[in-house]
Image: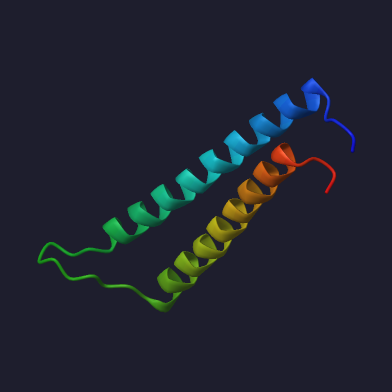
Length: 80
């Protein structure tokens, strides 16, 4: 149907890269959060608030990955 302009393609690639970077940072933040909760004897001590925080990070990660998938689909087949 209609072709995407070169500027739109560049902007979508930038947005996709930023979303992938955000997803990577979310994984890093979750890893740091879990690492902070490990005691010296190797046990993982997490409270309900910690699990809630990890749940929010997981939802944000899924949404970021969904956005990356949608942008990639829009780049390959614009307007469908």
